[in-house]
Length: 629
Image (cartoon, rainbow, N blue to C red; front, side, top):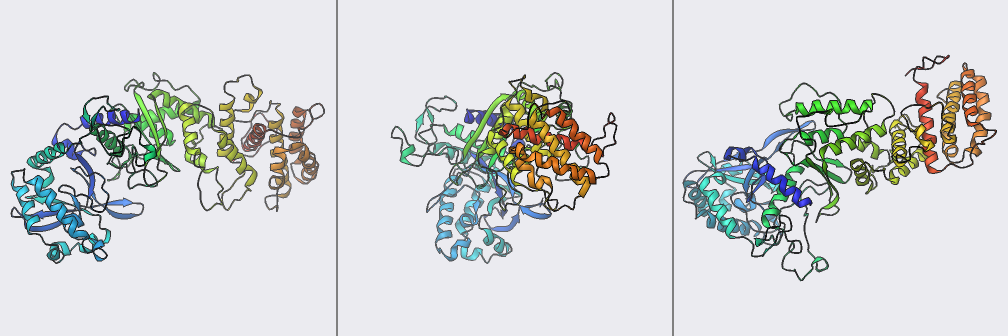
C-alpha cells in the first residue's frame, strides 16, 4: 500500500509537467531522469575546445552564514553505484569521470584515469546516435582532452582547489549557451538507450498489478533525507540468503517484484517529499522522519497538516524576504480558524471550516527511520480522509489544554520532558516518538511509557531556576491530564473525570487530588513565611514521598505548617485553605491513604498544579485578594 500511494502521488506530480518549461522548473524528474546538485558547467566551442568553467552554485542563508549551494538540475538518470569499477553517468558526473581529476589520485594513481575512460566510452556510444552540433562538440572534447594538461588549463586551474577539496562536485556541458543534456536530439538518444537496456526479468508488478512488465532487479535509487543517514538508504532490498525466497537469488529485489516504472515512481515521489524542494517540509522528531501528502495537486492539505502537528498557530509575519517560501494564505486562514475552534473546545467539522477543498480527500502520513546505513525502516503509515486527521489532532490539543489561550504544546516539547535536562545526550527513548505520534493520529490512549517517563522525571528532578528545571511544569501537568483523560475516555461515569479539566475543581473529593492541592497550599505557606532563600523547601524534601506514600508524610507537613502560618503575615489565609481541603478530605472518616497507585499519583500532581495555578489568578468571588501573575 505504501508503494502504491507513493506511485500515485508521483503520477500527480508528473501530470503537472506538460511542457519542457514546466519540467525545467519542476523538482520532480520524469522516468529516465534524476534531480541532482550540479556545481560547474564546462563551456565548449562547437569544435570541442574548453572555453570556460562556469560555477553554478548559488549563495543561500544557512543560519547566520552564507554558503554555496549547488544548483538542482534534472539530468539523465543517475542510479546508485558501487563496486571497484562503478559505471559512469551520461553527460553529468563528478571530476574523476569528466576531467580525470580527483583527490584520490595520490593514493590510487589509476583511480581517475579508469573512470575517465569509462565516462568517455559510455558517452561516446550514446552521443553517436544524436546527429547535432552539441553531441559532436562533447565527443570532440572527450577525444582531445588530456587530464595531465587539464590541471594546467587556466579555466580549470581557477577552481582546481575547490574541485579537489570535495571531489564530489558534478559537472555538465554547455555549447552555444545551452546545456547539452537538454538538447532534444540528445534526449531522444538517451531515452532510446535507456529503454533498450531494460531488465531481462519479466513478471507481474505487485504495485500496479500489471503483467509481463520488466521487473527492477535492484531498487537502485537511494532514498535521501532520512535522519541520520541523509546520504541515501534503500527502502526495498534483499541481500542475504536468509531473505531470499523461492530461489530468487539473481538480484536484490526479485523477492519483492516491482516493475521498473513503479520503482522509479515511488522512489522519486518519496525523495521529493524528503527534499528541500517540497514546500511542506518533513517533520523530524528524534530518530523518526515524517512525510505527508494528499491525493491532490493542492498543497493546502499538507500545509494545514504541517501547521497543526507543529502547533504553529501564531499570526504569520507580513514581511516577505527574498528567499522566503511562498505563503499559502488560504492555508493560513484555515489554520487560524481551526486553532480558534481548538481553543474554544469546539468540534472541528468540515462544514464549519471551508467548502473550497475536499475534506474527504485521501491523506497519507508516513514515518520512517534509518536504523543502519543500508536500509530504511517504516515506523508507521496511515491513510484516512483528511478531516479525520484534522479532528484527531484537534482532540489531542484539547486534551492537553490547561488554560484558555495557552500556546499549544508541540510534540517535540512533550518528548523533551521525558529526558533529564542535565543529561549530555538529550535522546528520547527509541520507540516513544512513533508510539506517541501514532496515538495522536489514531485518537487512541497515549502509551504508558510516556506517562511513566514523565512521572520518573517529576520524582527525580529538583527545581533549578538557573537551568530552567521545574519538577512540575505546564507541559508535564498537561501530559498527565491528557494521558488520564484518554485512558478513561470510555468510562464517562468514572470519578476521575471530574478532575481532568483545565482549571481547579474546588468541589472534587478525590483523595489524591485533594492531597495534591493540600501540598501546594503547605508549600505556599512555607514560602510566605521563609521566602525563596530557604535551603531545601518541603517540595524538595517531601514531594516524591507525599505523592507515593501520603500517610507517612502529611502528618509531618501539617505540623510544620503551623510554624509557617504563625510566622507569615497573611498566615490566616493559608490556615483557612488547609481547613477547607481537610474538610473535603474528611480525615476522620476517610484517613489519608497509605499508598497511591500510579494513576492516583498523576491525579496528585494535577491537583498540585491546579492549586498552584489558582494562586496566580484573580478570583473576584473570593474574600481575600490573591496574587496575580
